[in-house]
Image (cartoon, rainbow, N blue to C red):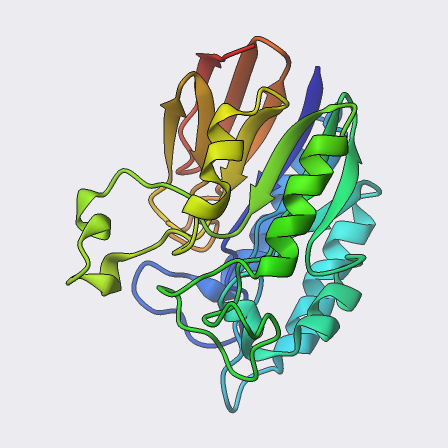
Length: 264
């Protein structure tokens, strides 16, 4: 069994809080989560929108450095994905600060191979945007798609996939072409959906971005979206346990708990 802690959508900033999104509390919440988590968890996954950059407030890279220091202080290995808000800064700087080998990459997830994907671009021809991308226009670039398919084909292990942006969400309005501002999923997702859904090496797909969270089974395979840590005063994160038959999410704060029997 593989165990890990998942956090997402911290949106950390020293900017004044806005409604239910309490950005300035996220560093404190992260410390609390990593101090209180199940110590058997082998690693931490951060699914992006880590820090928000705003004029006249702390620079985004400084905020990212504060979050990276909290992860390092936990003494655990941690892995991050890139979200749309994270593209306020150059992706190279983002993944260097957070210790990522590249914008997309693999890592040892115990019994599994972890694959982290990067859909933080609103033009698949420009994987390094020169501006903060729009939250509703994520894409995967062709180079990454080919790398993903090759990596899955060559893997001797079963696979866990991680990305900031979901591949599918439960809101039917997101499927409407005339309602793009409700979109949260990767727009060219169909290029790899067959592999995600049908290749038995892939055990589960995890993402953030859609702050309300959800879980869906497609042919017995779980697609999980974790709830945002920034929303509300609660410390929201998840402890995850997965093996060849069961996925167990122990939720904290606003994150729901559930156990699923999954496809072998």
